[in-house]
Image 1 (cartoon, rainbow, N blue to C red):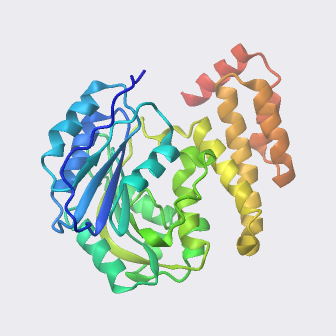
Image 2 (image 1 turned 60 degrees about the vertical axis):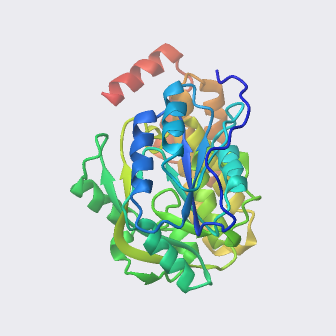
Image 3 (image 1 turned 180 degrees about the vertical axis):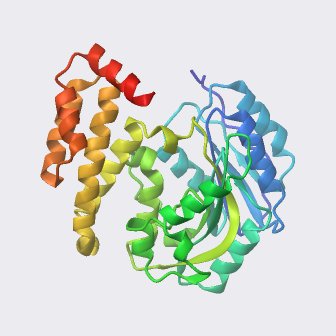
Length: 334
């Protein structure tokens, strides 16, 4: 439990606002957090502030890291929260604290290359029509070692291997179809281009998909910088690796919302396919937790969007005793 603590603001803000607010999403990973903050400290462009969005980490080592680093930055904002509020509320709170005209979101297990802020700022400042600029990514492992094979696979999976530096043809396609635009992986947003107050808590673990939607839905443009300026860490504790219930619930909620937006009418068939998929994935995640009745409801709701071998198998598994289904999952995972 995180006890009630009075808000503390570290660092002294100068009257002139920084160009970029780097929001660091942090929770209970003190060692990785040091690496992330070290990467911020090495930026060649110093016109930025660091806004810490720690969601009441129970590990006191996180507080120690933040107090240690507060003196290393000219602009450093850290207000200790009184309780854990979840990633979306934590992000909204950090946006309220930020003063930069551009926003970068850095998760505590990732890192920036030294030229990241300079190139993102240069790209956004050169074209006021841009809502967001994003860049190439290097995949690193738990120890921070670059993984060339995984980096190539990442670029191919999200279509970044087909992008060149400059304007992207369709922000909507990049954000919601190919997902080339990954807000948590090397993206900087023009602050006034995003409706930050339209950020539902239900987005939860899929908050970055919703942020891409906010950048794209009103026809704003985006640009790609074909340089590897961001390091994305793949490790067992990452939410994107666990694909837990919160992550799948967020996907289901968001794609269901997309179906109600007439601006996205031409993409509805894609969203329905993804709703079928994520209902099946959510149902399986619930089965892993032993929530068989809830899983059956999810599989049933997903049928109107389509069925698959996974959804049919999951429905069958949901009628088995939890001890048997748990054993099957253990065998499958091995």
